[in-house]
Length: 255
Ligand code: XBP
Ligand code: MG
Image 1 (cartoon, rainbow, N blue to C red):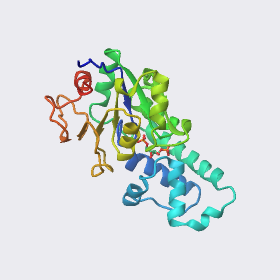
Image 2 (cartoon, rainbow, N blue to C red):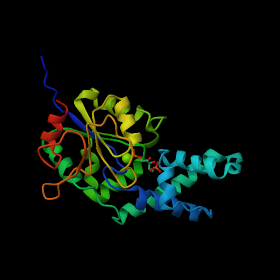
Image 3 (tube, rainbow, N blue to C red):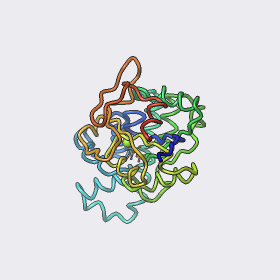
């Protein structure tokens, strides 16, 4: 006998999923922080794409040192120094968001509004710093939108970042839901691995840097969530009967 599985919550990734924040948001903020610290480092578009394999800004800075300037790893206060450089980066990112530089991706605002109307929980599961999440939400959906999310799991709240499943386990636990009652929406292979390891059915909307990554195991791979007036392109998965993601389609997807 088939049992009906009702969708109870949608778990959104942030960078690349809610908005295309990496190339013209985080990357610029990192470079501005390097300048502020009088470092002659510059992360260009290609280099940043390579560095994105490591999730988390502090972890990414450390990885860059390991790869390109190992001598700097001998600094006695390295972790504190990275943390303060990263704090400055966060300030620059917040200020970019305040300027409204990065819009939400197609379908995001529509789907969030619809899920709220349908009384479906919404949550965030991200490796990015909490201040970045709130700055993006404020600048795109308004200050009150932060309260629309039942749970926001961000940054260092768990010790291991994506592709580890920890952030998704944390969010499921806060929501008191099982993985099968939820859908994750992600844009990257690291994000997909994280959600799938937590057993959560996952939909991919590819972003600037992630288009050619391996999305095996995803329910479907789409260009974006689409709008009735701006249909998505389906890259992988069984074709849907409409070209924009709404609550009904998500609910059908997990059944
Ligand atoms: C993306 C990340 C983040 C951002 C930078 O996370 O890996 O590290 O690039 O943010 P997600 P911080 O797609 O899971 O939202 O510098 O605050 O870490
Ligand atoms: Mg992402």
